[in-house]
Image (cartoon, rainbow, N blue to C red; front, side):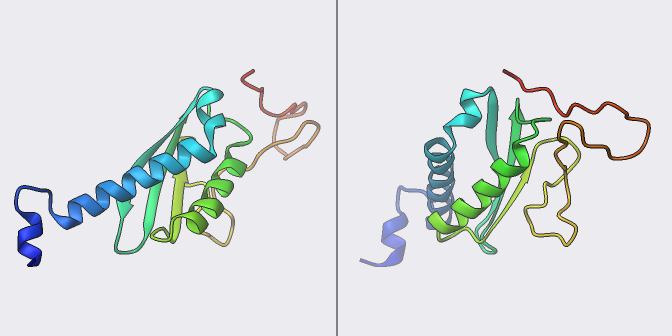
Length: 134
């Protein structure tokens, strides 16, 4: 059967491949990170670049401002690139000021969690860290 015959009456191979990859990523997030939704957060695929193997994910809801978001993002990156061979790079954002360092910037980029009793200078004297949403 010629390649053209496979496309008659169906989506193009590229569109089908992107839809399959999008579904694979969505299922990966639901299966491996149910706590995102359980804690009132959300994870949405913003962009997939099949050629470079990169995906951009937006964490929202309770993930925005959560002190554990950087660790969740790191876990997503590590596990997704191992489990989904088409993905080489994961970018994630919580909407709290940019990329969370998932593209491997030298300074780590993004948000740094604060811990009770930790001082960072400035006018903040009694930093008790972020308030848990539960």
